[in-house]
Image 1 (tube, rainbow, N blue to C red):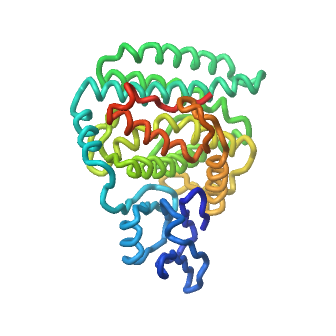
Image 2: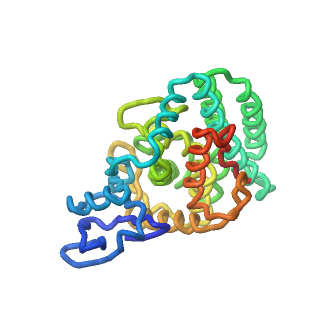
Length: 343
């Protein structure tokens, strides 16, 4: 169990979460392992066989503390959240724009532009840092192809067109992703993106990080009063947090992909931490998940300068700042939504 940046992560199997006054108590086999005051938390993420008392769920709902339940392998199961907060006028404007083809296209274009530019930056960073990179020419071709995609996005007239351009960029990006894996190639060779379930060790890391990132983005959107379910690039589907998936796109390369590559290339994770199942699916063991969680939280505490606001902030605060900027745009305070662009 770890607490970082106002989020409690519970990975110990058999943990029971309850309350003692205004404190969350985590017990394993009747023994108290952790106490955390409720007012210090914004979210709780549990993995596997973890249960919570109804009173804890109620108190968290009252205080706007979201609880996400994931399988032990990191697959999202459910999220418990109290009443949506925020100005009803903001949410009504969000819904109006989701029904407006032009407004949806403008926002979808912003999310995808940031994703493609940030993905391209990951490739460029590797080219800059490794002059003798194997497959350098292929990576350079992918960089140029993604630049062409970015140039085409301003002329895209529909969300479907934008989705097509995003798909082209993703194929170029993941088509050379294996060249960015510099260590333990036998274990972490990347052939293609596989999601549910991940079919290799690198995909297992990426899927795990994407799940955690989705929790953070959904929480940030709820905190400013937006509805995480109603998006622009990802259209309505029962149980799918469309807006959270939209905003998550701009953070995938910068936060999840770069961290996954760093963990592998610095040998912070290894072959023994992954299990191949009869179906071919690959999952991480508990020690590896904890290593990934620790690295993620360390990354969240790093400081950067926000490219639009020009202020110093932590990486972990980025989803909250972007959610606030989106809310200001929907209210009419900003002419356009400025997505996060990494360097």
